[in-house]
Amino acid sequence: MIFAHSDEPLDVTLLLFSGLSLLSLAATLDPMRGANRVLGRSAYRWRLVSIDGAMPIASCGLQIPVDGTFDPAKEQGALIVIAAFDAMSFATPQILRVLRAGAKRSTIVGGIESGSWLMGFAGLLDGRRATTHWEDLEDFAARFPNVDVQPDRFVVDEPVFTTGGATPALDCMLSLIRARNGYSTALDVASLYIYEEVRTGSDVQPIVSLGRIRQHEPRVAEAIRLMETHIDRPLTIEAIARRVGVSTRGLEMLFHKIVEVSPGTYYVALRLNAARRLVLDTNLPIADIAERTGFSAIASLSRAFRRQFGTPPSAARRARL
Image (cartoon, rainbow, N blue to C red; front, side, top):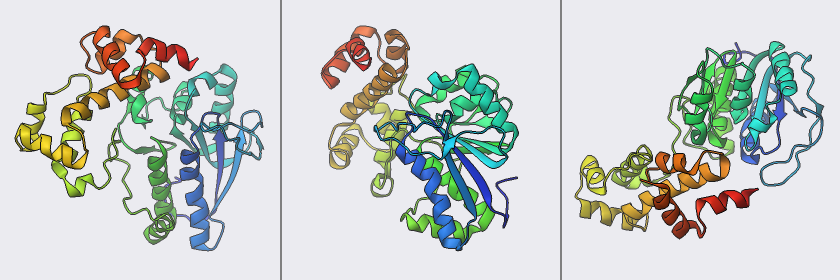
């Protein structure tokens, strides 16, 4: 058990794939550095590796120096796979064999963001609870029917754990530190980053990060949550207003005050942003994307998409290549 009290150092191998988010890497790596600083000893030891020893390129274009090639025969306490964009392109038979071999010599295997996809393709999540970034949850569940997919920020089901994006990775690492080194140590590490809102694994991943809106105007926050949970079957603004306990006019005024746009405008933008992610990051037919984002037909999506982004979905998809 890795998520349990221990005074022994934990050896961690971070296996990096090109396209990874720098923030996800930092959220995974730096808490271990912070714990060592707080504890005054090397409670965590890590190596950064890639499949071929070459420097992976982050999503922002920066090259990440690594310590060498991943050795699947090396014993390690934790193997953590960090990936994001184009993760599925790395799911080759050779790479999956290497992952399975490395997993056999690791006490636990973790997947950060799209790292869970590679774990899934390698069969490491079958019969386990797992999660991935909220954008991909539906497709992840469809692709891996033997995995109990959860919308949680992070899921620990030893001998595996998985997380959503960057801050869920930070929450997961703080949970690991709390389990191994005590609650006060985890609080001290969180304080290094002035991170006050530490989440539990079972907290659901939000589409919209609401920040202080929850405290300042919970009715707007609840309205936005209703919108993001009804992307494919949009609610009327009147229905949303009733659910949060205000009049339609009252909700309009609250949105203009807090978000500076009308609730209707905000809702359409939310759905269009979801459509744009599907256009750019998947190969789903445009008709399926229209259905998933609550548009009655391809033509309706195309008109709204062009107004919002200056080009129709088909042109946006061609331009990504």
